[in-house]
Length: 84
Image 1 (tube, helix red, strand yellow):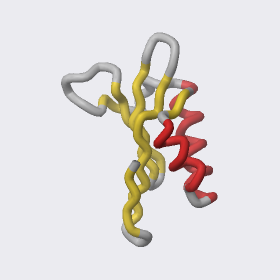
Image 2 (cartoon, one colour):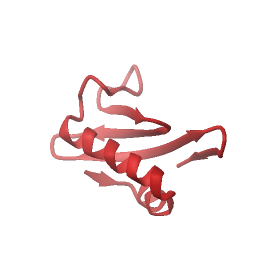
Image 3 (cartoon, helix red, strand yellow):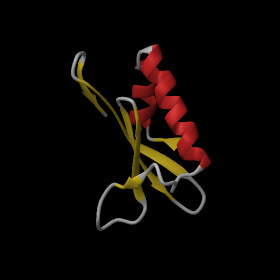
């Protein structure tokens, strides 16, 4: 699993509970990047996928050798919205 610089910085500054959820989601993606609990992020792109858990969403690219997280979002209306 690799992270873009922007996602790595966002991960490092996430509140502790969100970081736990994010890391749990990343572990699930790493175990099965094209699993049934993920979906294609774009209809014209077969490698960019997305998955979510609770209020954390991750967009990632599946290559022959790596899974690269390109975007991480936290959607929680009670705290406002973050996007990276």
